[in-house]
Amino acid sequence: MGRLFGTDGVRGVANADLTAELALGLSVAAAHVLAEAGTFAGHRPTAVVGRDPRASGEFLECAVVAGLASAGVDVLRVGVLPTPAVAYLTGALGADLGVMLSASHNAMPDNGIKFFARGGHKLADELEDRIETVYEQHRTGAPWERPTGAGVGRVRDYDEGFDKYVAHLMAVLPNRLDGLKVVLDEAHGAASRVSPEAFTRAGAEVVTIGADPDGLNINDGCGSTHLGLLKAAVLEHGADLGIAHDGDADRCLAVDGAGEEVDGDQILAVLALAMREAGTLRKDTVVATVMSNLGFKLAMEREGVEMVQTGVGDRYVLESMKAEGYALGGEQSGHVIVLDHATTGDGTLTGLMLAARVAATGRSLADLAGVMDRLPQVLINVPDVDKSRVDTSAELAGAVAEAERELGATGRVLLRPSGTEPLVRVMVEAADIEQARSVAGRLADAVKSALG
Image (cartoon, rainbow, N blue to C red; front, side):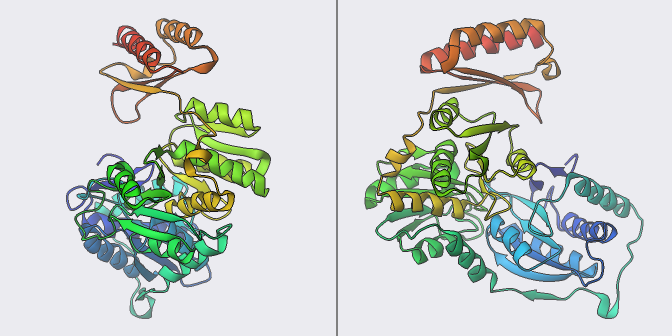
């Protein structure tokens, strides 16, 4: 698997890359590293462990729980719950560690392990690096120090986690959803019980699809990566809007009453204006990535909301928010972070807040999302080039400057080397789709010429 930890934990094909042995070893290593860091000082440590419904999560959960308990950590097993629920419960229960088993929007054969620190925050990079190092040391022969007798960890099911998390969502919802009809696509994933329960308690009339997980059907043709079923269901049921989650429900996309997609940029725009009106949008600023549509930036400028841009990935959005004290941030893909109420992207919370804005204003989601116009966006991947020279090639810089002059203030160019493959991504936005395609094509040729 190369380096084990990526930008979102450890992922791979379950029982091939991500084995029971690896899950157990990483869990033991995490316990030892956190103990060395002083996290457990003066008390008996506790961990919250949850998972999505994947079949492989059943044996991986057993491995993680066994590893933690063998290292002297008491375990609260919360079962199938969304990633943001595990993060919330880690903080709310005062646990020293949280573990979520999920591969998010990936296909069923994959799975992953994500660790949360005390408070429900993502582990610092240096702690992940240390866990990986310690795991490798002991995998190759160095013995663990193992507690015995009363020192071993105790394991119990924490069934109250479901209600505690739903109660949290209800407590932070700005207003009820009475009178709204909402279709929820749960991707046969971790929110299949939580999300319908939350929307129902909030007063909405709820229609669910993709809410029958069997361990094998997660993300299969449904959820936030496949919106076709949701669009059809919204139209069939005459719903006011539809909400789609991914497998671990840390993201949310939406569909308006006419069956049109509302992406993460539009959701951010709607929530930014709602929060500013409520006085909760700190510094009147929203955080987004460089891949956000130019239409979002232009809309925020027009509405007097500052926009801070980060690199691609919700971890960079969160880092900026925490460093500067911002309250709202997210990605076009639907990862939306409301930092006053969540330490990670929370698809159920996002969907509730979006529906609450519709209910509070009496306006349709299409009308609210119309605050921004999505500019046509063309993305071309250029393979087999020297991506390391993207920022230093004079030839390429000239081609980009020419493209930017042609596009003017209503267009944008972004060249981004892939983090995992020998290719460069060319992204062009323009007021006209044909112009965007033309400029992107010329820039792709320039990348091949300059870096090939």
